[in-house]
Image 1: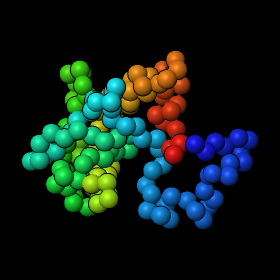
Image 2 (image 1 turned 45 degrees about the vertical axis):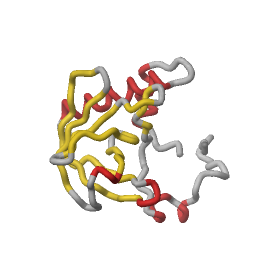
Image 3 (image 1 turned 180 degrees about the vertical axis):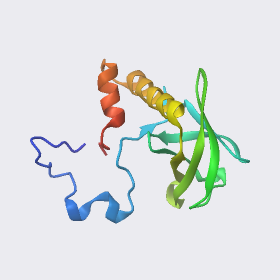
Image 4 (image 1 turned 180 degrees about the horizontal axis):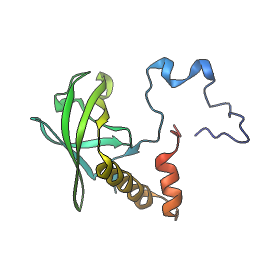
Length: 151
């Protein structure tokens, strides 16, 4: 993991010419594996394609197995579910990339309204706290959720 201290990038951190954007990397904010104790804990119902386990999730979007029938550029409606939680999150997303090597489709949120956006933020904070290997506060977890990607 790269760490910046006193504004000086560590050797593992890319320089301006090596940024992820040049390589097609869209990761600007931290993404989280959609797992709890090794089992899926987030699912998405995609218009007409049924329920699929998420691979990862962030405040900007999620990834799902490409076998879900999604193609790059597609816009679709969705409903997010979280294990053991009756609340749902509804919105629209767009497929931004399909990676054949990992059979994965990366999707970004294009419509996620106020209450649903707040609910997603709360779900991610809870996920960070539940999966932390050390005790962390809600404030620390929120900083991780809102912070830049660490990988």
